[in-house]
Length: 82
Image (cartoon, rainbow, N blue to C red; front, side, top):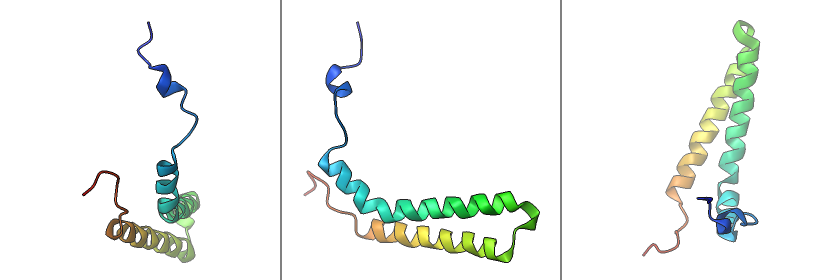
């Protein structure tokens, strides 16, 4: 006997609300990917990392923090919240 309910397995994809949440957070997700790219480039350069690479990492971190604050300040109302 399986403990996994078939209704959970048959779900086709994310709901409209889940897609809206992803789209709302997409600027932050993109900024985090940019930060990851900058960090990878800096790590790959090792001790030979240029000032440009370190500035790129700092700039990307700052952008992630800015967008995170914006999203935290403007959280959309969730269902069931009064």
